[in-house]
Length: 112
Image 1 (tube, rainbow, N blue to C red):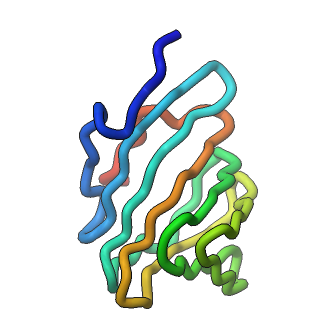
Image 2: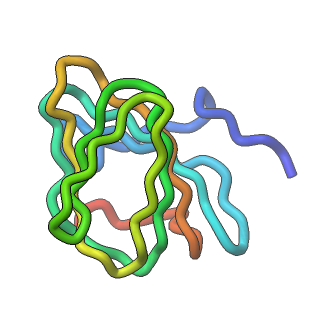
Image 3: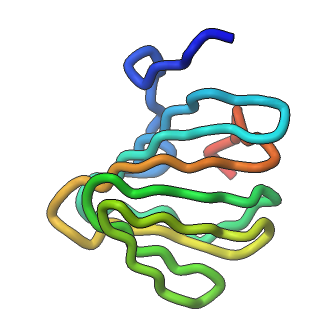
């Protein structure tokens, strides 16, 4: 196994202002880096994967099954699989963090 570096991976603009980079992926989980520009929003969606995340820069506002959760630097969160959720950067600074998905979500179709 070789390490996967963020600097080696090309980020994809999944929606306007939200850049995602797929990192390491194993048999039972995968890791993704995210970068939300100020004002960027991921619309409500759901997927089978349990999603755990960690914010290290900025403030991410999540709406998880109708409940607003605000996460700043050093905060982590869990979104159960098949649960409707959205995310947005309401601040003036970029939001950067890491998500871990189980089962792995190595090549999602960002258009869905």
